[in-house]
Image (cartoon, rainbow, N blue to C red; front, side):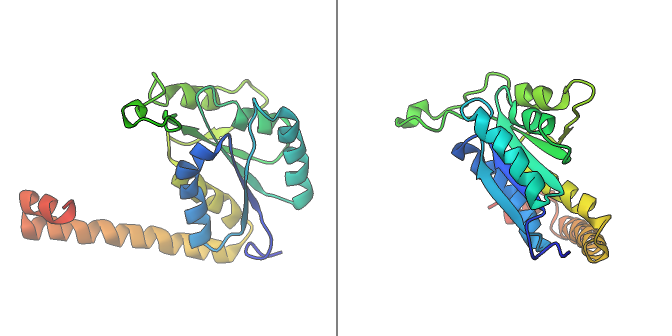
Length: 191
């Protein structure tokens, strides 16, 4: 079985507004050429669909499900309760982005995403979900790659190269910082 032939990762989110955050997981999986299937599944608005999705994920042979949700963030825990597939939860800071007036497009969550983080990370014993940081879907993607790298040696090699590239990138930025000085570095880097 190849990680690029059929989907091994399911990415689900509670609503379309979560897609802006959850694309970070897809981008990482795409970078590693890992096929994934993406869907909107609401734990509260489509509970029967959630149950059907869990069955679908098992039939498809998914190895991991990445589930993103904001607010009460029940989606990761609920999907984990319906399947034995490991679930990585992405807590999402909810924004009031569905309003029409610009003035109304402000933060919606009074808790800054902490509500979602706690909902996902504090699952009862027996139904665990791995949680990444608030809005850190990219980290969920990397974690999925790490899990799959245990089965696919080619992914392990790619992951090691990714880490090497990160290391080199930090050293390059540090050299630039030394060369230009802090004030000029910031002006050049963050125009």
